[in-house]
Structure formats: C-alpha cells, structure tokens
Amino acid sequence: TKEDGVTRIGDHNLLMAYVHVGHDCVLGDHIIMVNNSSVSGHCDVGDWAIISGYSGLPQFRSVGAHAFVGGMSLVLKDVPAFVSVDGNPAGAVGINVEGMRRRGFSKTDIEAVRSAYRTIYRKGLLLKEALAELEQPAAEVPAVAVFVESVKASRNGIMRERNRG
Image (cartoon, rainbow, N blue to C red; front, side):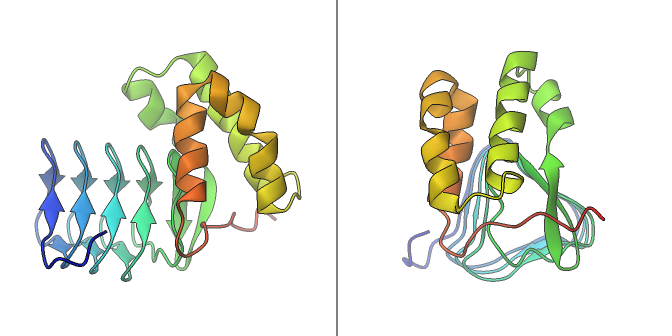
C-alpha cells in the first residue's frame, strides 16, 4: 500500500455491518467482509477475498486474491492468494477450493494450485527452494503464478500451516 493517506476500495464489494477498513488500505474487487471484521491501516486485500466475521488484520498485512479468512481469526502474517486460514492466531488450513469452484476455476487449475500449496507448505523446503520448484508450474498455469507472486510479495512472511496433529 501507499502511504498517501488514501484508502482505496474496489468495485462490487460487500462490507457488512460494523466492518472497519483502516487508513491507507487497498481493497480489490468482489471482496466480502463479514460483520465486525477489521483491517487495520496499510493492509491490502486481493480480489474475491473473503474475511469472515470478527476477524482482524493488524497493520501492514495482506490477504491475497481468492483467499478465505475464517471467523474470529487473528491474521498475524500475510495470507497468500487462494489460501484458507483459520484460528487465533490464524494458520493456513489449505486452499479455498470452494471459492475457486464458485468462480469457475477448472479442476486442472484447482489441482495445480493445490500442488503448489503442498510444495510451499508440506515438502519441508526452504521458501526460496519451494519458489524455485514452482517456476515452471507458474509459467504454465496463471492461477499458480498468482499464488507464487503473492508469496513473493509478502512483506511480513506468509501464514504458516496450522498444526494438523
């Protein structure tokens, strides 16, 4: 976000009751912010993201395009595109498959993003190694490119996976 004192909210968004959008934020298009959700100053929220009720983002965080933030979640790191997070503090729980289906992504695209998610989150690689491994898939599948670019653009580190145990 820019520090110009201007908050920019895109088109076709649904901001429900008691939503708070802080200063110097940039919200994309087709976003849903559910009752009592809040984004503090200097946050970015990508197109088609959903921030569920009573969830909050501190300053300078980002939520990528098509991401999903579960209810009552505290988002302390950046959420990559297509990733679903949940909890307090929030952790990644997978990709937003249902959101991708509703927006017309093909099964091939969904599986490619799911595979890219596994590369970042479950292979045990350093982030730079995982990103290098995803160069070819990102060149072939635009949705994977969006996911990879959102990981690269993180200013605060990406949301890590919740303990699955």
